[in-house]
Length: 105
Picture 1 (cartoon, rainbow, N blue to C red):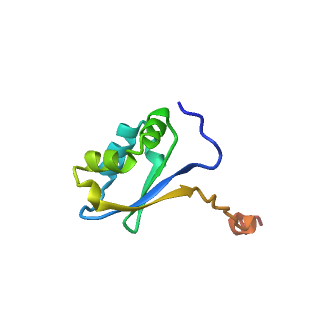
Picture 2 (cartoon, rainbow, N blue to C red):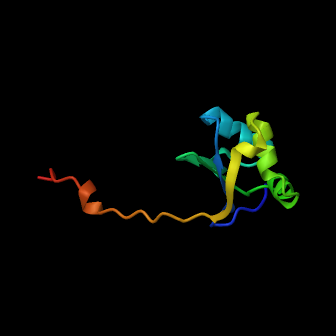
Picture 3 (tube, rainbow, N blue to C red):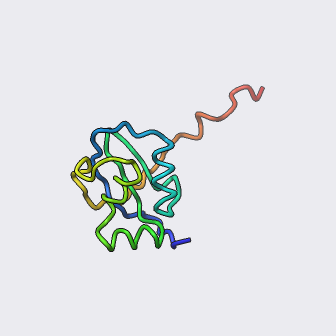
């Protein structure tokens, strides 16, 4: 597998004219040779993290939008606002005292 850095890089794009489902995301991941965790959708914005050699080759050929459009069976014109993105790690903080058992009597 393509080496995965701690912080992923990829591309986000607005996808119009289709409501993406989990199977759509899985198909995109399979076609790009990346993990399903590397394809996300939020508020109509599709994010694809580049975590494979196949995906890198497609990006190098400047064909990511066309490839995604072909996979979704939509027109490439329905994919707009393509931007390079870097994953923003989420730091989760919680108070361990919330998990302590108070019934230790």
